[in-house]
Image (cartoon, rainbow, N blue to C red; front, side, top):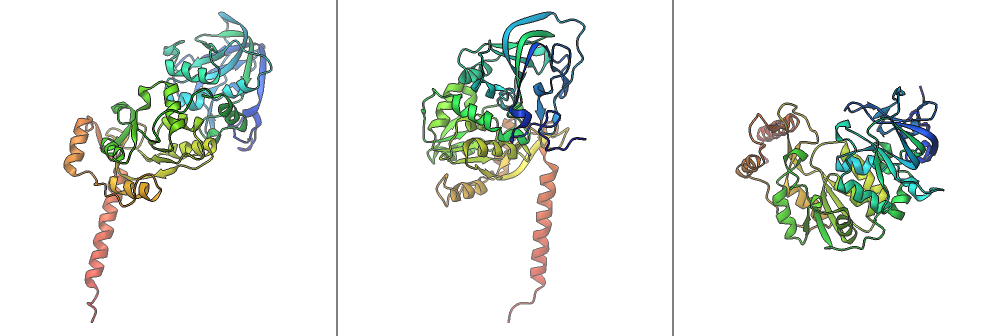
Length: 398
């Protein structure tokens, strides 16, 4: 078994380099999209003789999500010209930003131009659909560069296969070549435009995206402190980048928008990231900001509790964290994002129940309070009772 820190393509890509900064060029490459939907899928690139090209695999943390596919009996289409391998084209905005962008670093140093970027779909049913945000993002790296999506076995006259320079896991820091390419090319013609203080909100995303209970109240409180409430999904990529470049203070609920911010953010822009759930993804998001912007965000856990799917009862991307506004005010005040000494009231039980009802979260058939947070609260109550009991037994001072 190979060492986990080995820089070869049989192990996860690492920001230190190795295969994640290598480029393999194949003549008459064979590109095979996935046949069935799944988390791990046989798909990827073979050379002209049918040998697997591991440099084309998509890794997430410690394992590849695309594995060696079988060579097909027939290859129906040949794509002429020289193309850049883009890997898996994700429909999810965050995964697209982090995983579908991971080969684009090679655009910064190609010896010869390419016809465009060639992807395979994550979900076969999506076919060759290219969404607007995907096209707009790639246009910020290389204006006018065509996008092609292979929906069946395809032979490519010449395929440039860069290693995975970005992603989820240790590679979230990005390789030097990836970060340099992003800083050199991405959004370079976008001028800063917008307010000095913004809050990047998730409140308008809807029930299926997870979020923060009490976020609308938080927006009102932050507006009183001079923050503009920014809903990135309502704007094109260019507008988002203009806002992020202009801001001098940024507060955001943790989520995909911070991945985009990190690509144009600077060390002189303080960032506060409000956790909306207990998840290791928060650490990766913070690492992304650190390595791309050159300064660490203030990561704030001001969760009173978490509301989770009743049939799963554990934290996931659909969970709703409930903000303790008082805790949040204290941390934001101490770190210079708002005035110190603000008294932000927490939600009352009536307000909480109304929000749950308004969001469609009420009732045990939908969402329930996380058992983990219930246990923590019970332990805290017992500890408090014991302390009061011990205090009552102590003799009065004479």
